[in-house]
Image 1 (tube, each protein chain N blue to C red):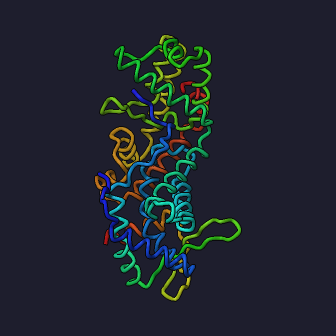
Image 2: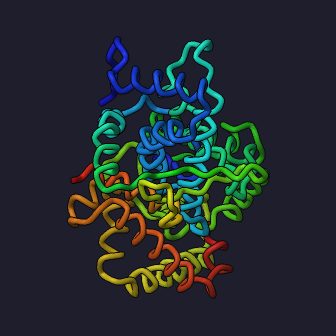
Image 3: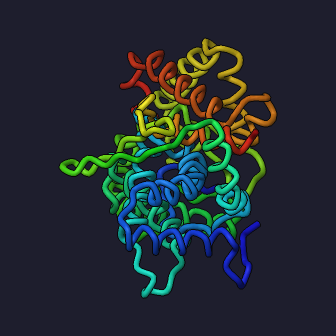
Length: 81
Length: 270
């Protein structure tokens, strides 16, 4: 029996089809977001280097700052529709 | 299943074009496009490792770390080195998430290396002898004294704050066992006091687990006992994998809270 907890494997697996499919869906995702007059903007703080994800309207007005989880869920949601 | 196409996919070619455009123009909108294109890899990598995240850690921290790495990979990519942007980003995001796991891990890397070596030695011994090695046998295989082996195990136990809410997976069996059940290999099974402690720790854990909402318990069983992915669980329960991830974070917090007064007891059993 191998206890795997806490033992980290250094070598990344090959990219699975599930991920390549989601990457390939990017153009459709962009179109859906544009149709909603929204864009996802990545704002990087020059001093800290930390990034903030912002949901903006077509004019660049910030509607909401999103957590990473919210931003990724938003993108995944666009894939589902 | 893996993507093994010899020719770059259209999206990969588009990404290379976008990257060159970003490089020349510095237009952050183009960079954003690349980041949102590759964002699903961050989600996949982090959610795949959700079982390994220490109890005190939030998934959000790892998603943020993965996204930071993705942004950095777009900024630092060098096509002259031969890899595609996609391959480069995949490697960097994987590496960043692993580094963050190690950073959050309370055990030094040397102790984790020892853990892997001990697991491997135990597996090889079992393959030959059909049983797990005793403490003395394992110590001999690892070329340490039994006291040193116990010391390393104590370091690991001290670092592993998820010790009891983690149901560990068996590589040679379909099922899984509670981490508590793996402790018999230490040779303490004949120590009545230890057995009582283990039994008490199990009872506390089960009581805390039973106090969780039904959906939390169901998700824990599907994740740790049946080893389903967050996506598979989501499909089964009719919710998104993000929702499953949120419920999983909540249940870890609840368990941690419920077991806060039992930390000493739980650490005593591994």
